[in-house]
Image (cartoon, rainbow over all chains, first blue to last red; front, side, top):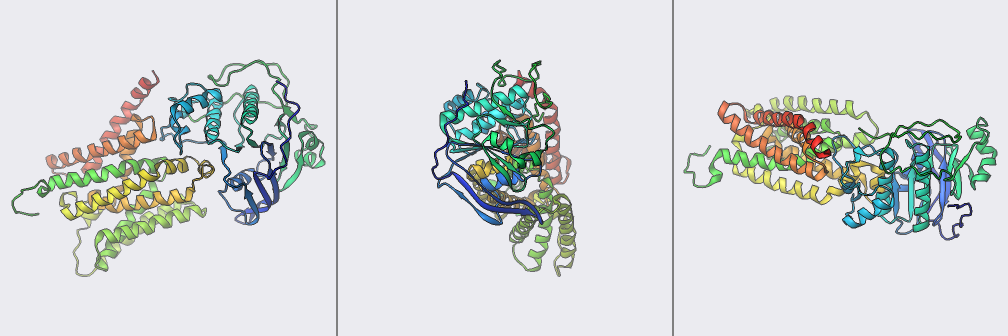
Length: 275
Length: 275
């Protein structure tokens, strides 16, 4: 499937727009004068090193913290599907996949089953969340977010703990979901060198917006080079799924992939899930 | 104790004790689960110890004990959750507040003029002296607490899981935290007569921890915790009669025994569930 040519989002009123927002904690500035907007159906990737204010930005977009300066506008009645980073479920909290998907809004068994099938973990309803592999866990989080019929999906480091084929498969899924539903996608990543191919716009964040634009343009931007260094010589992998061999991330983990593709960074096969 | 003819069941002090214990067990079960999941065991202790200060103030100002304890536990619970959200080290702060309020309460009680207080009754409970009036207060309060958490359950659960997730679903985690704080304070105040300030937290945590082995969903765990709490009350009262041991500590001992059995059964049950 080649999606090199993406339909650009229409220039309607944005779903979310921030204007010059400032946020600080205890005298430390986390975000300064950040303005950005996400339009309907658009895929935006925010990349930035650790401590660049990515989490703060997400909290602000969700409405968990109020900016001290500037403003955030959300489209009226905006529905957000949020996929958190590392959802740590306390070991003392028993939670089946089915129950998790119905938090806080109950969904019918049929709806739940169909959604699990769609995201590639069919029949996982009665499994404990703690027993899922990293890839399965991520897909269940996505399923829960999609059940809210969101106009925008916000994903915080969604590929952390996934191996390379896992990342490719997950990105592919996101892309398909966007096509099917037309929802916007905002993805946040600290991985400076791998960005989903279907991304319409990349925003480099480091307390402020360093640069912004189409992936190829950002790659060339001196700000990007300054921020992320020349060491990788712009090894800015646009993650398309040229991994056409299918690794079913939905099933199990810990199998040996043994693939020979050249990748830009080491990866491990740790699927982090709470034992 | 009344010496008039015992015509109704409620005249039997043992029946009243069992009913009082049952009322507490029913709310301590689900609430204890929330406490365990949010890892706020110490929070329960701080609130419970503050109840002693409430007793002292109630005696000093000649208001009803339950009113005094509700007021002070509520104040303590709100203070603690307020401090927590301002980024103080919660653990140390809770330690100071828990022990400080206990000591202050004990000193305060010693200053109350003209009253010889059976301190033991407030520290370890006096379930065998529960009056019809106490019973009415306990059950009315328990009904209120149950109604509150029944109403907010899914929201509270989502907020416990992850604040960002909650916000994205239109839930204000601070509000849910407040609901939890208030119900916890109420539960502690109501439990004072049954198990006493020193063992209230035990009634919250032990049945909940024991229930973990028997549950695959949060709701099941809350239900099982309530039932195990009930079992502990009945067994504890029986034991107290048979061995002439203090009732409150006997109930908590019974709960602990149940916990030990549950923990030993845990792996067996898990294996059977996994098949």
